[in-house]
Structures are given as C-alpha cells and as structure tokens.
Length: 144
Image (cartoon, rainbow, N blue to C red; front, side):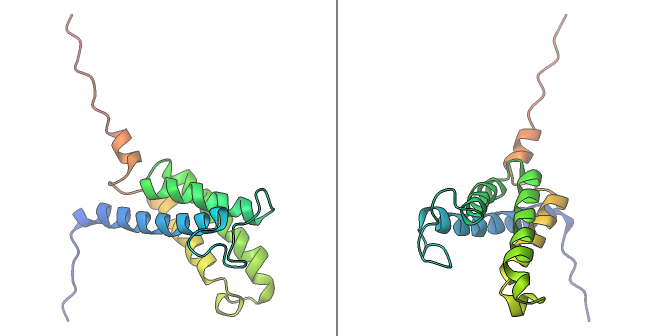
C-alpha cells in the first residue's frame, strides 16, 4: 500500500483554511445568539437578552473571537479565549448531564475547544492578516 505524501508547501494553506472554517462556524453561533439570526439561539430560537450571564457573554466571545480567528488577526490570543470559553461551556453546561459528550450534548463544545487549542498552538497559517502584518516591507537603507 502506497502512502500519500502531502507536500509541505500545503501545510500553511491547509491550516489557514481550517482556521477560517472554524472561525466562520463560531461567528455563526455567536451571531445567532447575539442577533437572533440564522435560527437564533439553540435553546430559544431568539436572541439572548443583552448582558445575560453567561449566555450573552459567551455569544459575544463567539462573535468577536470567531471573527478574529476567521480573518487571522491576533489569532493565537483569540483562539485561546475561544477555547477557554468552550471548555467552560463543556464543564459547566454539558458535563453535569453526563460525563461523555455523546451523552451530554457537548460534542460541539469539545470540538470547538480542541480546534481552537490547535489554532492557538500552530498559529494562523500563511493566509492570515497576522502573517501579512508580519511581512511589512523593510524600508530601504538611508544613504549618508
């Protein structure tokens, strides 16, 4: 059996695409809960009242951090905060209903949590605003 070798040059674009998809999905969850769009919050089908703890704040984190991760701006800190919010969601909201994600409905929280850990560790990939800002052209040397 032949092993398919993926060229190393695809690592950056593949990581970038993974980051963008995860960020977009997170933005959609946040927008649904903050604005009541896309079917609204999963529990009520409507927007969560502004400032309601912890739902509205979690949705705001989803919206803002998801957007930052999507475009690749301050990606590592945004992914770390998003990961932490999903860990909180898993252990506070889902885990009391059972230990395993399949039993407590926490699959999405666990998947988002670990996806954001991966993004925080590996970075945004080469197709990100972070990468573009790092590659600022150096000014030409001054002639004396």
